[in-house]
Image (tube, one colour):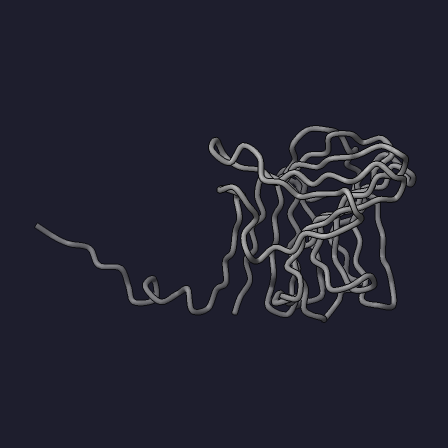
Length: 208
């Protein structure tokens, strides 16, 4: 009888790698998440027993918005080769703006952005405070679930993927923020009607 023992590097490899994920199981958001926006909006866990999603909903007034993020926790850096992935769907692509981002503040971010007022496609964007750089992904926004992935490298490239395929105009090599970042999911209604977005999971990976 033989027993195979893992090499030591397999046992302690987590010391060089940070992985965090949330499949939104349970009846409330994890403590890491902050949930905020205009009065009347919400972020609610639904279907937790059968898989879990968080549903972001805006209030009814034009330009009302709601978001979830890590609040004051910004621990992700491009220089540590950070990757973030979201599986999400919009309930409507009419009169809505949505972001799925690595975010520090309003002028330091990396994101997918859809704005019905600006066109039919998802945009890919970076901003280091001197930008932004914004490009058309070539991917039409719709109401199906999609997997959005951002891979940021210390070599100065950010790659963007939807459903496993790198999108048009990726990678972006300009206006890449050096600040600490966090996951940021944002939804805004552009008219006087509520909008919703479902997020199935969020996964983060970076080198330590």
